[in-house]
Length: 271
Ligand SMILES: Nc1ncnc2c1ncn2[C@@H]1O[C@H](COP(=O)(O)OP(=O)(O)O)[C@@H](O)[C@H]1O
Ligand SMILES: [Mg+2]
Image 1 (cartoon, rainbow, N blue to C red):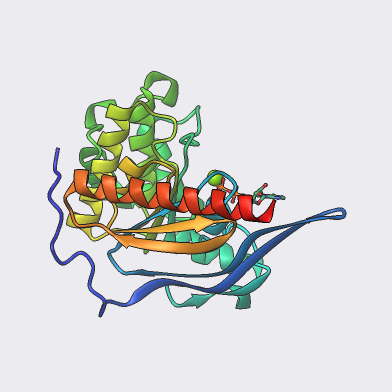
Image 2: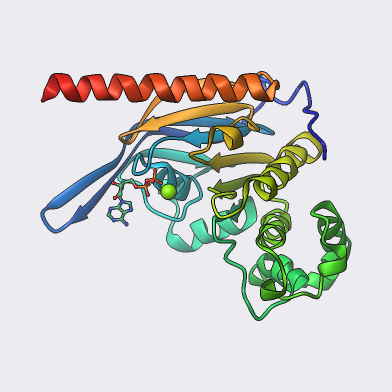
């Protein structure tokens, strides 16, 4: 397992692959309005691995969906790989998403009737490409995720960790500008989760893959270069990791503890 990280992984001079400016998202359901996100500013540099943390309901998934063009924002703007999402119609957003974004979900979302390699090739098929022209890339990805000998297995013939590795290869197959992962280890035991995180870390270090990962787990977040904290739909803090994992985990846990205490104190003052 590779734990090394590239020393030059974050370079402030590097181009931003993703910029969210004063992004708000309001859900209206009858008379109830939920401010899921409130004027969020968030940028990701090319080649960076960013974790988004926050309590349940703080807006993490909403932010990830907006960043990937899966949902429409209420206010603000998002620029993804040079495309201003608000200016595009649905069809153009779909094209931008297909060609620039890879998604990894908590529950893998593989098609049960397709083999591992067919699942990996699916984004190419959907984009109208001939997967046979990408044989080399698919072989390389199978090797990267350690599933060369499982290529003909269907999802129900694979373990949870193996299924998530197929999902990672599928997210990478179009060579996307950015990979967005929502709790990718949330449904895995800690050892398997650690393997998945090492794989994401390696893909950032060795393939310079840009990654944004939502997690509520300090251990998972410590694999990232930077951790952004959300609370009640707002960005409330940020922490840059050092590469020393146990030190980073302690720093993230301390931050979470402090912000929880501050939130409790605020609630007490209000009540
Ligand atoms: N489709 C939706 N319709 C209405 N409210 C929603 C919808 N999706 C999320 N919300 C609300 O927005 C807030 C943020 O949700 P979410 O982004 O899923 O949080 P997290 O991923 O941090 O747990 C929550 O209060 C949630 O109930
Ligand atoms: Mg969520």
